[in-house]
Length: 500
Image 1 (spheres, rainbow, N blue to C red):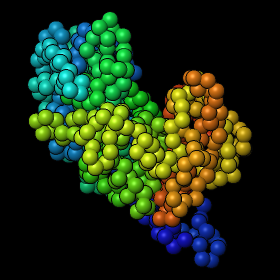
Image 2 (image 1 turned 180 degrees about the vertical axis):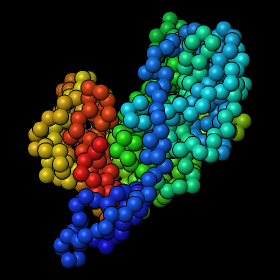
Image 3 (image 1 turned 45 degrees about the vertical axis):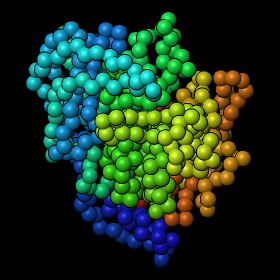
C-alpha cells in the first residue's frame, strides 16, 4: 500500500491534477481530511487547446489527390521531430506548378479538431517518378529532392501534426508527423503506430506498381498477397491524399484525451524502438490505434517499463502481432524501413528470430497485453459487459450482460485460456462479447485489465471500435468514456467525477 500511495502522489504531480471536489479519506485515520484549494500547474497541451482552432482540410472539403493522376503528393524526412530540429518535405506536383505547405496540429480546440500553425511561401513543384521496386524486398524508395525545409519552432507543443500540400489548382494531399517533447515529463505518452501505418500503405494505389506488406498488383490490376513487399519505405507518400489507414482511430483518441485535459506528450513507434522515448519518464504509455507491427526493441522497452511500474493502455486491437525489423537503408539512414517477411525465410534476424507472428516465437501478445487477436469482426457488434462491479466500470451504471452498441468492430482480441497469463498479476475480464467471424462460427471479444505487483496497470480494450465510442459522432458512448477515464485516472492518480 505504501508504494501505491507513492505512485498516486507522483501521478498528481505529473498529471497536474486539480484538487478533488470531495475531501479524500486519510489512509491511516480512515476519515475525511480537509484540503485547501491550490493553484494547479496547467500542462502545455491543455494551454495549447485554449487557442482558437480551425478545422483542417478534410473537414473543409476540397479536391483530394489520387494515386492514378498524382496531382500533388509528398512525404516527410522523419516521423518525429523535436522543437528546434528540422524536417524536410519532398513534394511532387503534376503538372508542374506552384504549391504551398500548411502545418496543422491535431487536437481538441473546443471541437474544431485542429489548429493551423503556419504556411510556407509559394513553392515550385514538378512531377516526380514512381521508383522501381527493390527486386530483393519490394520496397519503393522515392528519393525525391527536398521541396521545403521546416525548422520546428521552439514554441510548438508536442502533438500529432499534419503537413498539407495544396497546388495552385486546388488539389490537396498531406503527410503526418509527430512533434516530441524530449525535455518535459508528461503523465501519459501517446505512442503513435507509424510502423503499422506504413505496413498498410499501398502507395501508389494505381493497380500497377503499389506495394504494401499485404499486397502487390498483378499485371491485370488485381491485388495479390503473393506479390506483397517484404520491406516498406517511409521515403514515399501515403496512398492517395496521404491519410494513413486507421489514422482516424488515433485521431479520435487524441481529441478525447485533449478534451478531457490529460497531461500528454506524443511519440512514435520509432521513438520507442530507438530509445528516444524513455517510458520511465511517464506514468503510462497509451497505444491508441491499430498497433500491429512491433520490433524486438519496442517490445523489450515496453516489458521493462511494465516491470518498473509504468502502466500501459491499448485502446485498439490486434496489437503487437507481427515481429518486425527496422533496418537501415542501403545508404545507412535509420528509421526509414519496416521489414516483415511474415514467414521463416528472413535470415537477418539471428538474435531475435525471424519476422513472423510473436506467438510463433513463443512470445504471444497475450503475455504482454493480457488478451490477443482472435478475429475480424464482419459487422459491428455490441460489447457485452462483464465484471460490472469492478472499478473500471464505476460510475457507468452498467450491469453484467448489458450491451453497449457497435463497440466491437473492425478487429477483436480475446482471452486465450490455453496460454499462461502474465506472471504474478491480478487480472479481470471486463467484457465477453460474441461475434461472427468470416469463415464460420463465433468467437468472443474480451476487454481486459491486469495489475502487476510493481503497480503497473495494463488495460486492453480488445476492439478497434473503442476509440470511435470515445469521440466519433454517432458512436460516442458515455459509458465507454467513463470507463476509459477510470483507467487512465487510476494510472496517473487523478480524481475526477466524470469525463468532459
